Each structure stands twice: as C-alpha cells, then as structure tokens.
Amino acid sequence: MKLGMVGLPNVGKSTLFNALTNAGAASANYPFCTIEPNVGIVSVPDSRLEYLRDMYHPVKFTPATLEFVDIAGLVKGASKGEGLGNKFLADIRETDAIVHVVRCFDNTDIIHVDGNINPGRDIETINLELIFADMEMLDRRIDRVKKLLKGDKKAGAELELLEALKAHLEEGKTARSFGGLDPEFLKTTPLLSAKPVIYAANMSDTEIGNFNENDYYNAVKEIADAENSVILPICAEVEAEIGEMDFDDKKLFLDELNMENTGLERIIKIGYATLGQISFLTAGEDECRAWTITNGTKAPQAAGKIHTDFERGFIRAEVISFDDLFQNKTIAAAREKGLLRLEGKDYVVNDGDVVHFRFNV
Image 1 (cartoon, helix red, strand yellow):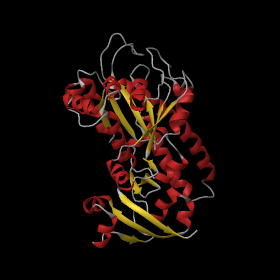
Image 2: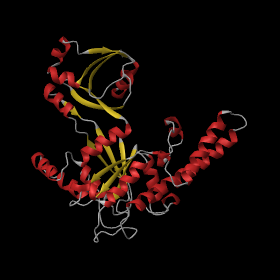
Image 3: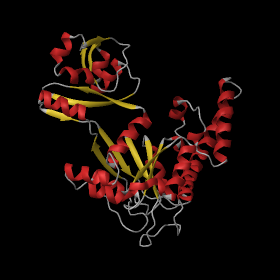
Image 4: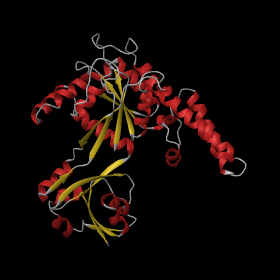
C-alpha cells in the first residue's frame, strides 16, 4: 500500500513525513524543500503477529509494510507545469491514496505561500490542479471514443459517461464525488481526483487535545464530510516528539493529549479501511508474517500473494481465525475442538486468518 503525502508548501507535510517514518527528509521554511519524492517504508503494528512470534520463535519475523511518499510541494498552475507541478502529478499518479496535509495552525514565523491560513482555499488549490489534469485526460479519451461511435455501440454509453464526468469536473468537483465510477473504468482512466483522500489536519500542540474547538479543523471536516472522505486531526510536532519516546512515556504523553493512538497507528488504520485492505497471517518456525490483501480476496489469490506457484497449484487452505487460536493457546488444542478448518477455492479470506496453504508444485 502506497500513500502519497501532499500539501501546499509550509503546511508541515515534510515534518509529518519525518515524524511518521524517521526517514530524515529535509524540511525547511521555504517552498520546494522536497525536490524529489522521499519514500519511507514503515512496519504495520499488529499484536496478532507479535503473539504468533512469541508462540513459534521463528527465524524470520515479517510484518506488513506501508509506504509513504513525501511529494514535492504544489502551487497554482501545477497542471500547466508551474513550479514542480509535472513531477507532482506524475508522483501522485503512482500512489493508492492521498494523505492531504492541511495547515490548521497559526504561526507568524512560518510563512504561508498565500499569505494567510485558509484551509478551504488550500484544499481547493490542490483539488483544482488535480481536476485540471483529469480534464485534460478526459478530453483525450472523449476524442478517441468519438472516433469509435460509428462502429461500436458501446462507445455511445461510454461517451455519455465521459461527458457527464467532465461536466462534473468543470464545476470544480472532484471525480471521487461523482459517485458510481467502476473500478475497471478507473484502471483505464486513472483520474487523480478520484483517488481516496485522508485529510490530515495539522494543528498546534496546544490545540490537538481539543481539536473540535479548532475552527480550521472544523472547516476541513465540513469539506471531508461533503465528499465522504476521512479527516485525521494530527500535530506533526507532537508526532516528532512521540517518535523519540519509549513505550511508557509515549502512553503517558498520549493520555495527557486525550489520544489513544499515535498518528502513525491512526493513519495505518484509516489507510487500510479506506482502501479496503486486510491482513492474513502465516506462522511457523521458519517465519511469522502478515500479508496485505484486498477485502473479499479468495484463498487461491491470497496464496498467490506468497508465490504464484501457490495460486496455480492451490489444493486447500488450512485456516483458523486468530481469535480462536488465541483463546485455545495452541493449534493442537484448537484442532481438537474442530476450529482448524480446511477451506477450498471459494473461501474468502478474513482479516486475522492464520493460514497454511496446501498446493501442488
């Protein structure tokens, strides 16, 4: 899973990226500090996998991972190549979802590219650049479809969809708010403004504990709610402090801020939910590992995540839910109760399933 972190210059995007990944990306008080996209790969915390590690004491322990890409700052006109726009658009096209960092704090020492703090305007600036880029793509697609109209009856329905979508974008609305776009359509027409968005409302350390009282946050929330996106209240500076603390100090610090989890943990949870991702687990003395799949994946395709030979030669999946394993302590005890099941090709793998695949080579 790859999340692209975007935002206007000086909104705290690279600071937040550094805090979440400890990747050491440069951050400074001027635009375009991030010239090339910085990539940070973080392990996904999973207490279930840690339990299996303690049970099996494996040679290898491999959590699932999440990739963050800190993408260069954006200015108006990016869709026409202004600033680092072309690079920005190319980099964001490669991500699965967008973490849009929005400045929700006042600080006269940190300049804003537009002179003052206005989350609605900032969000509109980036959305419009994505929309303009999408409109160019739709124009090219519409031209191609029009040439097919005489010989392809399906082209008429496609043209109707494309023109309706373009009219929607011309109103300044994102493709993700259009509704009903088929995933197969988006594979052939990968619209930037159709990508799922997590709005990260970056506020000060004095306001994060009572984020609902922050007017900037509430402005972002209104926008997020209108387009069925998710909003995450966060403080980049706090996350940087948390990253340097041990477990006990971290817990006390979070309690003081009325927060149950770190920003990284919350982004991971939201990212999985937004993209419809789950994890299944494999365990043994050689390795305990978490594998990320799309919710609804059947057993053979889940096996294919491990190796294509597993999918081609799939016979059965030996499955136990983690909860059943946890309650019975051992595989043997769970097997005696009939909780270890043999599942076939139509079995849909569930989040937290502990699976052993049987296959022919």
